[in-house]
Length: 86
Image (cartoon, rainbow, N blue to C red; front, side, top):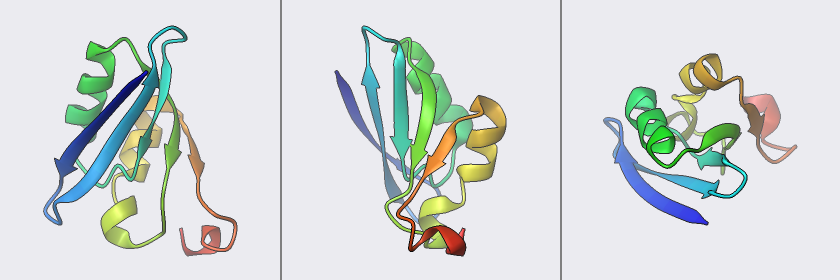
């Protein structure tokens, strides 16, 4: 199991990579920015991003969603009460 923390974007948000090395799959939590860097990190561990987990819908936590989805086709996960805010 891989768990790594990254400080990204102009808001300096903590983003997390969580991955299963055996399955080669993982997710990012709050990918606020710097998709290229984050995806490069995931690739270095042999991890394909399947999900993007947003802890909440504040712009500083979700502003990297679109680029991350474009590059990975990952599914976005967020609490159902916060989903309309995306």
